[in-house]
Length: 596
Image (tube, rainbow, N blue to C red; front, side, top):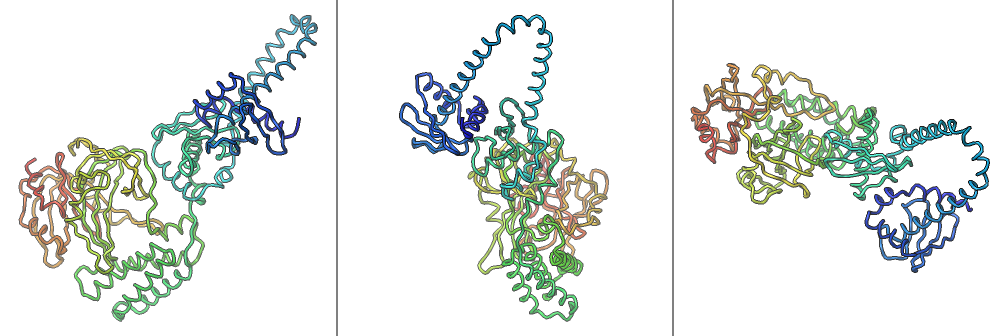
């Protein structure tokens, strides 16, 4: 017997019915058996690293000691019945030969065995029991690599994007079922995906109906969830592999030097030409793969524009905070001592990566229109995750710092959502929905990409929805602003829900250009909500100032955001109605909210 035939015999023994069905399919396996029963035979020619198989019906195929590499004369580009027939025929011939050899040996030793049968019966029973125990241990140890193997070697061939997506998916619960036979199969229940692992320590050898990148993701996720079930957490060891960074260090140095010059010059002596210099630097940062640096530069540029225009909205603490944080980030990047994860957090991304989440049950709590000083306009729609108690958002955004770029809030609010063409964004903001296979990023922003399925559900009244995790007292909301902000993470929106008894008073403050709404909470605390003036909201603010629909509005929820020591209202909720302050006044929802 040649060296390769020995390897092929070991391989054929591993090709159990379960293994071949999972590698091909049950129908193909049964057709192969039927062909053998009808008399098909195979001739084998043994080569150094392969075997040439000639079937009696005329087909020829070449096999190795793995199903990853094979060739067949038939036109199929998938594993075919000729490959299965070649393996199954060899198994039958091999088993037959072994049985014949075993029979001859038994006849030779028969007489001796009979004479000693009574004497050795008890010892044989002990040996059989020991063999069964050894077999059981061997079965367990065949898949011990899934817990004991070096994970860095197993994932070496996988891209950083695959690992990053799997790490994201592990944040969401996923029930698994484990079946151990000739293969160890992990079933991801929500995704309805099966991954079968062989005894060979390799993700590439695992079997999965999902192919290509999605298949690699499923294989790694199944392995990691199996390890998690056994008490092994691989998150930290995978983080380094998930981040592969390339950026311009020279641009980082240039940005830091210019900011240092700005701090030395001082704001009072700073020339207006500095704004154009920042614009050039922002473009350079964009080219140097430094997206968050670019955004920070544009933010500083916006603050300086307010300063030179002597605008009432200019804030010296805000400018200092922006400059200080950017300078520190540039300094850390220039030192090149931060870990890959920390560097990625400082650099950011031009476009967020989105990952598929099997299922999301969301409850709409309002929409907010906004404009940044770095030149972006948009509307953000807020939702509560009813299963995981997290805030999810969808943002419709446009860059307006280029010429001829406009964004109409009214037009976009009345347009149709990408998932259901008959539903407008105005309706979407106040719905209860179920998403399947929707893509979500690190900040839990929803993607409008294809593939997601959206179902509109009957909306529950807000009083019957569990929002206690989001509800805050007035005193705790006011304490938000004192929280520390990490250099290595983006500042989170400070959002809260307040139970309001009624609106006590409303007036416009000319000195700060703010509309002030004084609320009495259900806990009998007074809370002042501030709606900053902007030309886009002039009509809205005038209506609220006149008390439009506010007198009849009692016992409702106020969804608010804390920013710059102010509490800004986003929406009011009561019953199954949502009223987004900046966007819904023109639709008469405020009065309808008051009648509930």
